[in-house]
Image 1: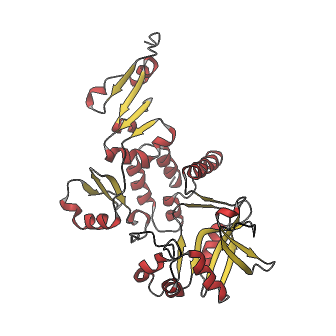
Image 2 (image 1 turned 45 degrees about the vertical axis):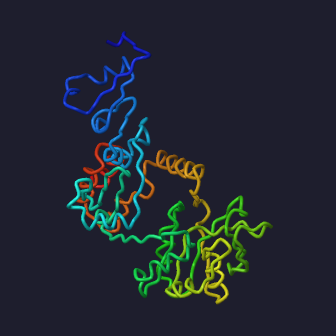
Image 3 (image 1 turned 135 degrees about the horizontal axis):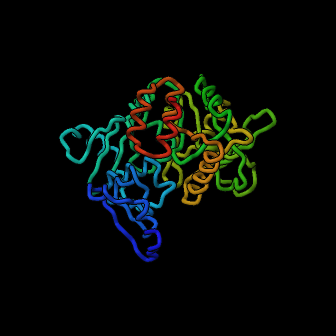
Length: 337
């Protein structure tokens, strides 16, 4: 069979019982094998195609598509308020279900959406939606009831942070009693960021958003810690020319009261603002390089939860079952050996 090298031949295989008697590995020697949907669980085709959005979502989460040629059906997130409404009636819907990780997976014409509740990580996650672009400080106004009388952190979802001592620095920041703290990191193109100038004692002298003239190479990252006054200060801000309340204006308000301090990601650490396709690619390459060299995962949520005592080995086993046969499951399995 190996002598029959069909260069221009492709074989398409479904995931039904009819393929069970075939020697698929020998078949790959003769033709390009295109597999469909869940076939990836026990066989690696040359090309994997999944148009069923439930399976496509499973493949995406398993990490299989990271290292294997895959074409997945397109899906789009549904609005958060729709997801909340869906959760209230999900048991009555045939196109949604609660999986073993305590997540609600919705499947329909508009795609697939997973609302993570956090049960699988031993935490509770709440959602609120900013319906229109109103600026970063609006997050504190929208989340006022959630914040209550506590202090609060704000982290931008498209920012990537990495550093050996970063965890300890973050823990220290949670002890903040009064004022606000921002994380700074040097960049080569400061004109594209909010920038801070400090003196030798790390006192903030000036804050400027995207300066036209060089002020400093210390950019304000998307990681902030605030006391409870941030709600009141955010409400007092006036919209800018683009009709948004600006984070720089909020920081200036704290600095004017001498209540704004700085922290650094640190030398050897990394901060990537993955707000564009290129930046997202750079972040992915950074993570891939480190993980491949070290054999360790960056920000493996289950590993973090296990290390903090939020979940146990039994829940890790449930996660392995959920992710299926993939490298990520193999990594999780090493955690409980």
